[in-house]
Image (tube, rainbow, N blue to C red; front, side):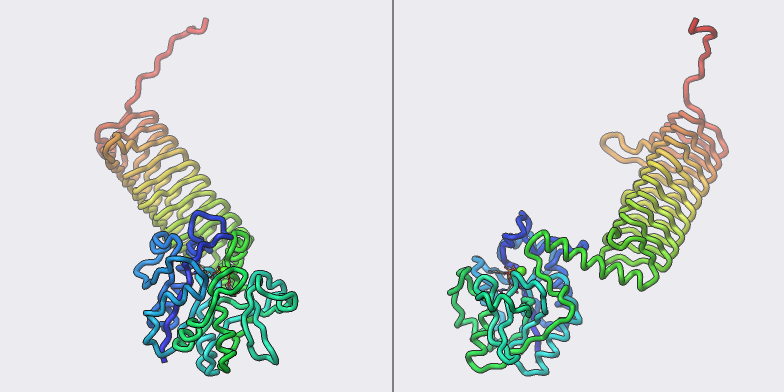
Length: 448
Ligand code: UD1
Ligand code: CA
């Protein structure tokens, strides 16, 4: 008993009206074909083979190390499978064929399909579902509950178009039976294509057993051919992901406006407000409040954190930090416990030790700021001379007055005070006051 999987992804995807190959369009952050390939790698398949053609380089960029064969001309789904003949010709077992454009399928469904196929002893088992409006899908023609054929929309009669059981584009085939039937298919149809679906009619005409495995949740088999369907798939996937988090104790105020990618983890009692995007390799702890218009990408956040209207990228944020509104953490920022960064503060590749505060209008880049230091409004680390980046080191319990320019490389000691409006170019020792600004001039009665 052995299983191989074959994913069809060579088509042009004309109906998508896109410069990108259809199957790398993303559903909740994951390219559709990657999603299918990932699932296939979890169901005990010994080879996972992709059929690629149209813009295959683009597709290979999103899939590492994948076994594939090339379909030079896209002459139909049957022709696509034939391209894998060499790889299948000695295989004694089952090949599961899937399409790269059905991203909502689940592992359980594929496992159950395979189990059913093995149990019934059919040569072909088709995954199907019932659609009230089956437009566009291949229809499953049955007689007394026995499968007779799959007829494509374009080739169907008025009567056949009324059939509501549709082909998901996923099948288990006994490999040798499949290859034999494929050698007999023709392109004698409205599209002039070699249809994989014609294998079913050939099996039946040879008296072989064909079965369907009917899925109750017809959302799962949604095929994405257009951007309207892409939006629908995103919506269904989003609902699935959000439900999973709510069931795990996350509070989502408006699930239609909360965008979480599958890779994200969130602790209980964390509240997500509308307009939050959580992406990539992000984890968020418990009891956090993530308010509207916030995007968090590849970050680790601890517990009891509040973020409002901010963008956080590739950074680490410890417990009880408050961020925003309108702050920006750029990659490699590390905010330790109880740090506060407020309005229009940008931090890049910097470590802010426990309790540091930078409330307003500040840029901290390539800096280390010691515990409980206060950074006044308008402070800027001038870290770049046009060629190189330099470090700023600020000690603990220091106070940097408003509108200070810290020209890096520069060091400010512990417990130091920098007067507002200073341009600091030399080291400030601990406990010192540094002021660097022109003296105030008063000219009495000047206006007269
Ligand atoms: C196909 C099925 C239809 C089913 C539907 C489910 C056929 C003839 N029809 O129709 O019964 O209800 O899927 O979503 O199979 N591809 C290739 N090479 C080609 C043509 C297509 O690799 O020459 C790939 C495409 O990239 C795509 C998949 O096969 O991933 C399906 O092709 P598509 O054109 O989307 O088929 P549908 O018209 O949706
Ligand atoms: Ca399709």
